[in-house]
Image 1 (spheres, helix red, strand yellow):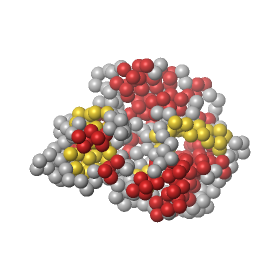
Image 2 (cartoon, rainbow, N blue to C red):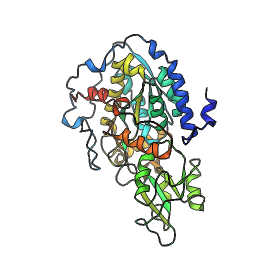
Image 3 (cartoon, helix red, strand yellow):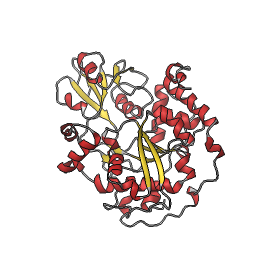
Length: 387
């Protein structure tokens, strides 16, 4: 089943993404979720009660996309644990265990926050294309990733998957994003991007298509007016420096290597105040055991409120602990601004993502409505918010 994922291409649609869509659609047809018993709890009929420690600051208007919007927060230690009557084993797939955006899950596991809610959680490293069919069939319970083109194609093909919680937005001081080598006479305010070759380790169909589109359009370019060159993580910066590519999407902390150097310019990154990834649920937690789905988000949100509420990098002891937990270099971790951990999802984010995917040619058909891609009800229940 996985061999077509590597090779086939249909029309303008980027081969890997279409193949994922085909794989997802075929798996959806045989998904056991269609034969499952009635769900234990219905999201539409659940009772949402006030939660101690989570007041007005525990929710922000999803339509608020202000770059200065403060992320939702409860008091440290809130929402308090509500252990499930019976312990529940859950598997969360993630593409990596070492990236900083995975830190809340790693800390929640290490500090026993999941266990406090009666959850025995396993973090399993799996690429998103491999994890999606497993998520749709209930073989894994959640995916820490993003609503990428492959996810949208899977939902369109029949997968019951929703984006249920955000992860982070960047600090205003971060320059993780699109960098370009300036040509003679160019400046950061005057760069012609059309026709340039871009190096990226992610390729087409990633959520970075959305912020990349905004940056390109501001500089006489567009997702369909540049050439893509997919490179390994260690090769992106090298290619940019030796002229192998004209521009590159540089992640933390790689952009530090060119920041301030003559001949390079930062054109833009992820929008401030708008998470582009986080937790994805399949039928296991959306339908079969909603109590466990809420419990998982409750533990995640409590971890954010307790350990990541503000600038967590001001705490030297915590940064040292985090570096050890993530198996990363402590100095490198300190060298970049903190992430703004944010469990909420902004209105229209998946609309904007799908628009960028269509511009790249990696998805076809009408855009999916937000009701098919996002579910905020579980994190709202976790903090006691009535929508």
